[in-house]
Image (cartoon, rainbow, N blue to C red):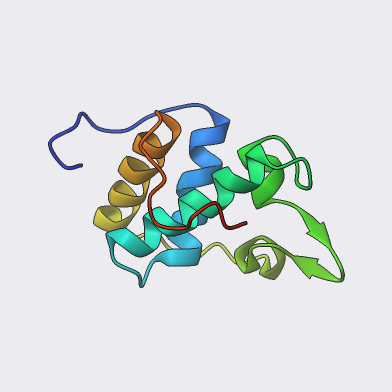
Length: 105
């Protein structure tokens, strides 16, 4: 991941990057990839919104799918961790294989 160019992208990339950073910051690479896989699996499912941003920002049942969306708190970003989250998001959006979650949503 670190050998790839600095990540960048559109709103979908930004939403996935933020979700990985705020929801899986304490996880290793595999944990962050697993969160990305679940989000992308939801995008592919007719039971969830059809975009990354739609999935990440989805509300219902008195809460949010991802806690950082509901708590209204945007924590300060640590640069290296944010860069890693962006790199993982870019790789996953570019079609990296989903090998960790067996299609889990």
